[in-house]
Image (tube, rainbow, N blue to C red; front, side, top):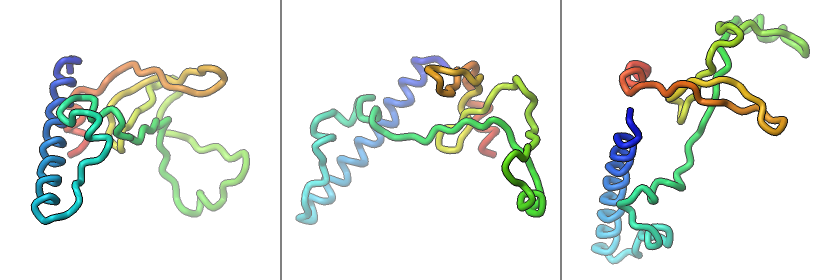
Length: 131
């Protein structure tokens, strides 16, 4: 997906979120309730990409998977090795909010582990992963 298409999609999400916020504010004002507009929405126009910049997402990286019985799990201790389905050197799977979005490789940055993105999953592959 091109950066332009992603930006257009995010702008569409921001516009829809702005419409929901406007409707909620109108509903609150119509019932005599306090305005639901926050300082953050007053500061930023809710119909721009800026509206989405502070949204938190959970990013996780999967090194591999393993399937084992509860008995095998209970017998594990310090030094136990779990054999994963992936081979060494295979790309790591990167998930955002539990949905696969990319693949990458492990790197070390300032003595900490990191992930370098090597492949962004196409929209078609993402849809297949949901089904």
